[in-house]
Image (cartoon, rainbow, N blue to C red):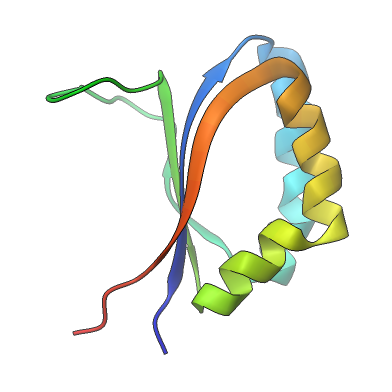
Amino acid sequence: MPKGYWIGHVTIDDVETYKLYQQANAAPFKEYGAKFLVRGGKQEVREGTARPRSVVLEFPTIEAAYACYESAAYQAAKEIRNAVSAGDMIIVEGYET
């Protein structure tokens, strides 16, 4: 079964409040088996445009990736994020070799 990934690109307007979002998302990420592959860090745009922060999370299955996003706990965390940032996020199925 293929893994699932969240890929996000974010512009943060209030870093201190964004930290509250990070605290709030920890429980649903743990519950659904999320693992950070990219969490901020240095980035360099080589083509096109991008927001200043990129995040990639790996989930054990695509179903877990969807279920985490739709969970009440993550939706509550997302409300915190929405108030202090703008972003783009996709959920994508991993490639099985």
